[in-house]
Image (cartoon, rainbow, N blue to C red; front, side, top):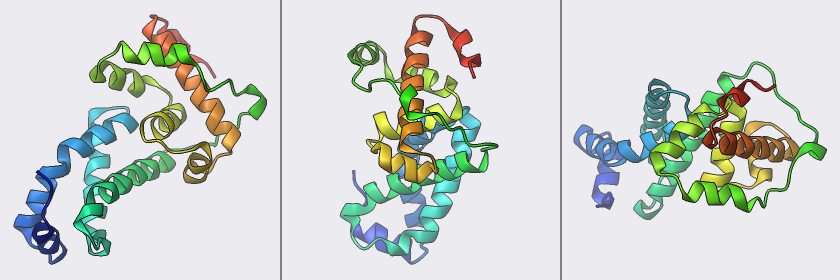
Length: 183
């Protein structure tokens, strides 16, 4: 059941019961988003809680209840990106000429054979940069230009990291986890 306009207004007026209802409504979905970006469940919960802090702090900017779902998802994804940025040590730059073709049909065939829990477990194993690009591009539907802007990388790096993430993902399915130690 969607959040009502009355609940949104009550949340904007700092009503604790309405805020609790909003939290209960979104916590499962947001935790699912966060798990895709995090390495551990604890990290996912931290990102989710940070997301809720931002959501409640900025809820006054939401004018229509119809846009609430998309706005909440956007805040959560951006919070996960902020978390990723805070953990960066050095940016990874990969030349565009190493980016493989993105239309790899065999990868999508592999995805079709897995359930959501298996996919989430494998995504969590990906190196952080690969995991971020993988989620933003394949799951959340961002373009490489948008990903480059969000993560502060080039489009070529985004394409390369997606290609490498897909390769690691596919090889992990085939039982070759040692590939995660590649540079």
